[in-house]
Image (cartoon, rainbow over all chains, first blue to last red; front, side, top):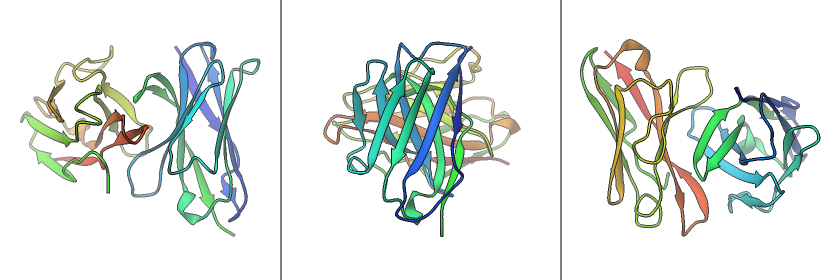
Length: 117
Length: 110
């Protein structure tokens, strides 16, 4: 069965770039779409964007100017970069397989990223 | 403020039936499938209902989803203590070009 695992620094300084990777095991990245979703502490879920196996992307307009999602099929991995972070970007970041828009299954366990100096 | 509106809380006693609503508009629920996610404390979200009313394998049949017009609902029949969690609805919004989530409903089993 497909499993996803996020990895990356848990602490990022304000104004710097948040970088996370999601490694897929038990299946190939070369099908489906793949999304990033985040949840700030005590708040709800926010979709960040998705990437297709061919590399096409779609980002949340509220984050579009700061977000880049990329894919590395050779590593069965996709990644998130979020630039110019502030404390408002502190959240648990999840990666998920996207079978259709908003159809997220499965999810990674999540990675807490704190933005602080 | 979330594009999809859910009640912030709901509660019920074991064995009771509980319904959680999700209200949207013609640009999201009115023209897109609705999905429901369960978030147990300290765990990642789990898909509960897809395409309005379909259950993934492994999800008990006490969970059911429905949609009518620009609203959707999740029903839990025969409530159990382990159903205490946060529940989120989600859909694609054609006008905003974004996946929108409800604000979440915290379900308490009394």
